[in-house]
Image (cartoon, rainbow, N blue to C red; front, side, top):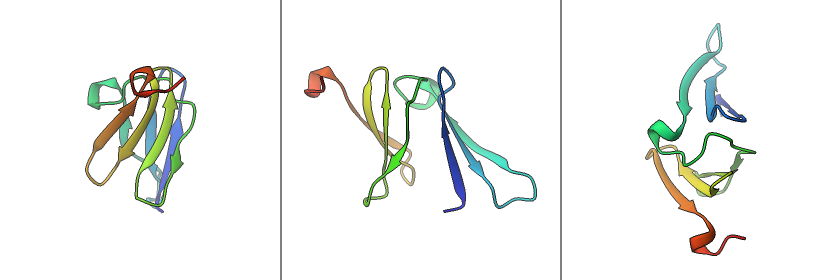
Length: 79
């Protein structure tokens, strides 16, 4: 795609559009817009247009087209 995803320690996820003459921040995902924790260890796309991201509070599945999260934690069986 046209976007780069950068996960970070203590700053959430930065989504950058690299097709512009200067790379441009599209959005920063943080606890302010639904991410359960701002330390994200990785981002992994799946075949269903979702992005999986492990973080300090568990695992989240993010659907960018809908700006929607599904969160998984110890309560859902993560160990």
